[in-house]
Image (spheres, rainbow, N blue to C red):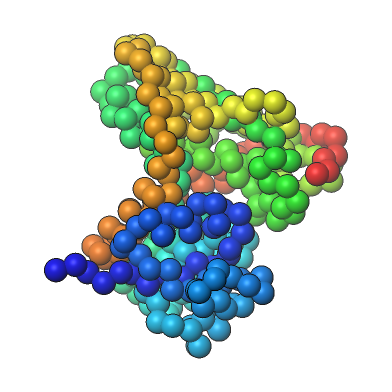
Length: 310
């Protein structure tokens, strides 16, 4: 006997929701898109639309879960209210503007007995799980991360990303950290960092991080939002059995035996995981990537660089 679809609302219907969330939801029979929530006056054809979460809860159709795709700075009160209403909650990455609010949400969800899912979409890229399995049991000698992209291409006019809590270059950089903390067998910690802040911005445009795992393996991370031309989303791991290279954000995996590239499966993977968590009554709230970002702001040396404008 098949189970009834999970009635899902999506709050925040910007580019990431339209490009990734809605197609993944439509392709997954475990879910039915029951409502959208946004300050935008119009949503999707045929789907009830509400201006805010309170209006949905008070007036809208019955829902079981909500995916929050808003900027992180406004995420906590929305997630807390959804949990209070008994809804299962999917948090787009980063799961919050601060580490402490994500920890607090986890406590609220546990107390309410509802699922909370802090999603890290890059972990579901095609090459990531095979990379994790290949590295298990091998001696890791060195890790290099090069994550360079053009912010004007990927985040045009998104002022929130430059504001406190928006993370700046760590918005894409946390994707690399979500892969790193998943594929390495040992825990990772920050040793030191240098963050470059444009003179007119409250968030960094570039960062240089030195990390290590608990065995002392050196890890270097180069983040920059000023890249033009080809974009770089690469993780290179040197081991006693040769080199592992994850390219294109984890979609392409090269091992000594050869290269494999698969189509984009990140958001379908996220929604499959969310459905499994809901059915099992479990939560998945891994704060390791956000912890490293928070430590970078806490521990990093700050350097002021030239102003940046879109």
